[in-house]
Each structure stands twice: as structure tokens, then as C-alpha cells.
Image (cartoon, rainbow over all chains, first blue to last red; front, top):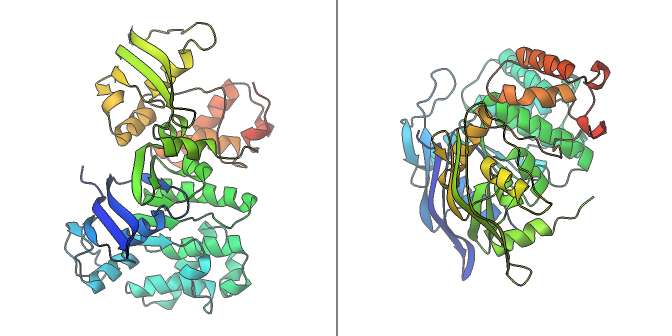
Length: 267
Length: 149
């Protein structure tokens, strides 16, 4: 089987400081991988390098592209594994609207706060060629329903939504074009625990039903245990340990992973 | 079906003076299809550790753990995930679930992961819950509200 995403030797420096160094891994279709580590460990730098938000100093991010579906995507990329770092900007942007999705920690970073909820979801559809207003609105309403936002809120701006609703709206906006790979940066960070649990359950269901692959950056070990198949532990920009999620959490081998697991506060 | 040869396991506690604890040394075991094997011994003998190693939850330091054709010690995470989805089950003393998800959905989830439609998976979950004498009025509640048994 071809990996959906193959990351090879990604490094990023901020002047003399290491952002992340020589990170490599393969992600297969349907897999969910968690990246954990303390703040400053380079996990967000790595995520942004993979998603094309930051240019890495070295390395490749090879994605198994597919030919554009005739009705929706109008991109011109050919299919098969391609290094997305070496892609042209328009190609990478098209990928970002079709096969890739990015869920930011703060929903305001991923939403347009001055546009209605329906407009937020519809924008991504229009970006891949949808032009029929009725269809766009129907699809937006359908997605609001799937992320448990009442259809009557379709014309309201996200500024009138709670934090949890904004986060769910951001997820709807990202998934409406049926991506295959979702990057998530602390998707449950900053939400209160009852909202977190519901969001986790929602994400789990969507990942399973849509067969999504996902890379989730978080510092919350409980979140990765429930969502991720695999886990990567980072420290000072390097991967210190990787493996099955429950194996890394229950039998951590590296000193830092042991420290991380034993530092979790028990309720 | 299950073949263990010369399996050893040590825990190295890096943050507690790098203490090395030897838990399992040179264990070999063979289980044929249909056999039911009990691991018994005093507390601390390594029963749970051995079982967790067979499930791929703990990593073995040396030896080989074969389930069918797959060597758990040397396989990729995705192979172990597939094995767990199709072949291996694990009944733990503790249940770990997303809080507030109904029992029926918790039971149906592994079938949903195999791509079985929701209605069919829930039907199977209903049958199993009935068989295990869990009253129907509890199915819509989270299992975290249940008694231990």
C-alpha cells in the first residue's frame, strides 16, 4: 500500500534555534497520528511545515495525490505521490482546499468572523467551483447539522457562537469538500471539558465514517489516547519515541516519554 | 495460533535512578486454536505483563511473539491495529471510553470501524447487551455510570 503522506527529513530552524529537526514518518490511509510534547517541542512547527504554512529548511512532504474529480475540483495536478514542498503555490493552495484540511486551535484563525456560518462553509465549496446557491446552502445546512449546530443558525455570524460551536463550525468548513487528510492543531484546547468530550466523540465518528487520515498535535494525552492510532513524542524539535498510542502511553521507553506520562494529573 | 519463544521484558525507569526491573525472562508458550489458557501466579509474577505483550500493549525486549503469521515484536503499528480489529480482543479490568457516549454506541463502535452500517452494528450490539443481561433502560446511558460488574 502507498502511504497517503510520507514525511522525509523535515527540518526547520529559527535562526540558531531548532524548530524541528530531521523528522520522518509515513502515514497510511485511515490512520490517525498524534504528536505530543511540551510547548516549544516543535510539534506545531512540524505541523505547519507539513501543511505548507511554513517553508522547511530541508526535507520532503510527499502526498499521494489523486486526479481532480470532474465535478468539483478544478486543479490541474496529476495523480500519484508528489512532493508538496516542491509544488507550485497554486497547486498547494488547491490541495489545501480539496484533499487537505487544517483545524486551528483557535476557531477564529480558521473562520471568517464577519461572514455567516453558512457562508463560512460555502466558501470552501465555491473555492472548488460550486456556483449553485441553493446547492451550496443545502450542503452547508447539512454540514451544520452533522456537527450538531442548529440549522436555524445558518445565517448568524460566528461571533454570536460559543467557543465550542465555533470549533465545530470550523470543522464543518474544513470537511465539506471531503478531504482525505486533516491537520489538527490542539483541536480541543481552550474548550471546557464537557464540550471537549462531545467534540472528541464527533471527531471520532467523522474520522471513522469518512475514512479520514489525520495528524493531531496536542499536549493532552487523554485526547490522543481516544483519537489516535499512533503516537509520536517530540522533545527539543526531535522525535524521541514513536509507536502505537497505547504502547507509548502504557510502556514508554524514552526518559522524556516516561516523564510526560507520569506528569499527568489524575482526577 | 499464538506462539511465544524466549520472550523477555524489562522496565527501565529513567526518572527513578534508571532502575531496571526484570519482569519476564525467557518465556515460551504455544496456544492452539480453540484452546483456553489461564495464566496464574502470585501478584507481581508477570501475568498481566505477558498478556499485554501478546496484545502489543507492552514492548518485548527480546524474543518473538507470533499471532498467526505476524510477529508482534517487530511489526508496524498499522499491522497491530489491523490484527486488533480483526483477530485480537482484550478484556481489561478497566473500561476507557469517551465520556457521555451511550453504551449502545460504545459496543457498536468496533463493528462501525469495520465499515458495518450503523443500524446493523447497533442491532448486533443490542443482541450482545441482552445476552450479557444489561437492562435495556441503561443502553442509552454512558457505561461510566455502571457498577463495576
